[in-house]
Image (cartoon, rainbow, N blue to C red):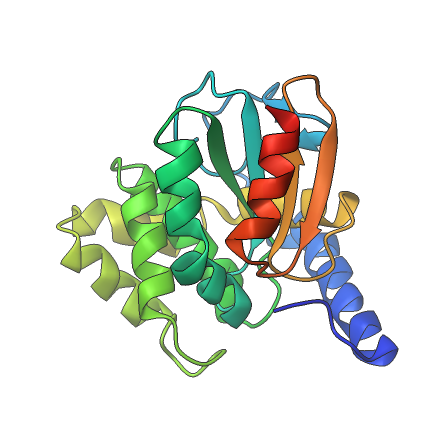
Length: 223
């Protein structure tokens, strides 16, 4: 969703983010292990807790998407803008994409984000990510509850014992909370928000499910 138009709603959204981040100390699993390069960052954005990189690791432009799997505008961008970006920039080695969770729109949002990393354990992060956006319905209407999250994993042929153990243990709870905190640090108060990082480290923010032409203008100015 785009940033809320009414100031009072924007304040509520920000408060929700703060509340989720503040809960990390008491909710996180002490046994959680995240085997990632903690130094990975682009521009001012720490991306080590985000998704695997989609595209060529050496691509000069980095696209960082702050999103929520229950965000309708994120789904619109996924279907209407992302395919052309992949075709013209990511698949051609000009850009790479990293997804950082801003999972704050509903109670199922953080769990859906955790499930994506449980799928990553089996090498299926992007397949699961895409399936979530393809299957999205209304916020917290049950489409992304644990039962459905397990069904998505089953449809991808994942090892269900491993997936269920991961999801039930809260293995990636802290990882998602860290991503929410990083999103807040970067001033992402709505979804989707994008930070585009040039080869020289210069960065530009794009807010909302903007059309392909908006991204194209930014990319071409950086190449």
